[in-house]
Image (tube, rainbow, N blue to C red; front, side):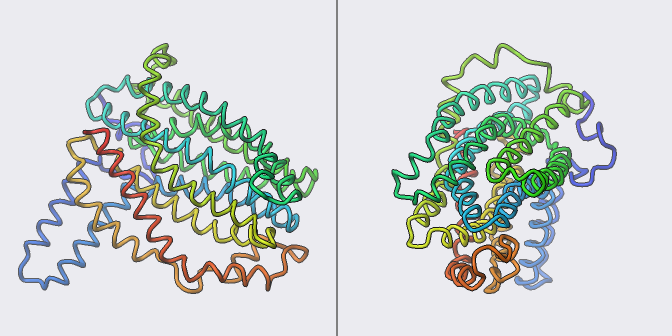
Length: 424
């Protein structure tokens, strides 16, 4: 069968031109040559080895990181636009996005990770037809999971008031959350599709689609807020629309691309079989990632209980942007795992572990990460007073470096352990 890498786009901008297996063998040879060169000092050998590992790692994970970061920026841009409407709107979008929406995001992404592992194994075993079945089965399961989540969204105002949030902020946040209900089901379709493509090392199209969706989203959000004056509900509906745009565009690519001919053969009734077993696997896959995202959700809910909830939530919106980027970068590394079948898992981890440690060290934000250039993006002259927000943001600054490091570590451990769970 013709290689997937030789079909489709002839000169991809983001994807590696070498198959993952060939890249792994090349990196191993280079590492062995350097580590066995006793004419070099141990420090020089260590530096060169880390350089090779980082190059190899980013070659695999880089495109997926771009996709996850672009998708995160879509949500971030909505909060920025809402911040220019006023204090309350920024606080409401922060509480809605980080306090309610993260519930669905963590659950859907975690459950969707089962598709990545199963599709990766099926692709490595040359059972190409099963990739489409796994994707459809996961989509059916996640759509069903979205129904109880929709109930949580509909009752968000009552739940926020029950948790002690102020009436003013809870009402505004609930209005924003109502517009995010379609986004739940966009998540349910997007993550299986995304994992289906990643298992085949097809990431370039998703990156292009996400970039186009971001441009479209910014324009439509500006139109909805500042031309039509639709407020928080309009901003949330545009956000939901943008996610559905990504879903539809990726599905159109799958149906029409020559690169997916072997793995997509149309809709199958097999998608409705074995759902209970698939649910148990997906739930096990979701547990650790849900904990990873939900603890930040709890932090946001607690911030809404402070004496000045609007300033607290506004500052968390700014800091959460940076934290969100680091999480997306860490999650993006998981895509590299799906490029290998189970026989390569241990070999891959030998490259992954030291390279990620070096990556974490290089990505720790410095003392000035949260300066005024960040929070000025989120407010205008009528928004939260700069001094109040700056002081609040500064409270998070000294602890952020440790947080980012632990964030990357925990996500790495989650994906490594979850893959081991499936292989055991």
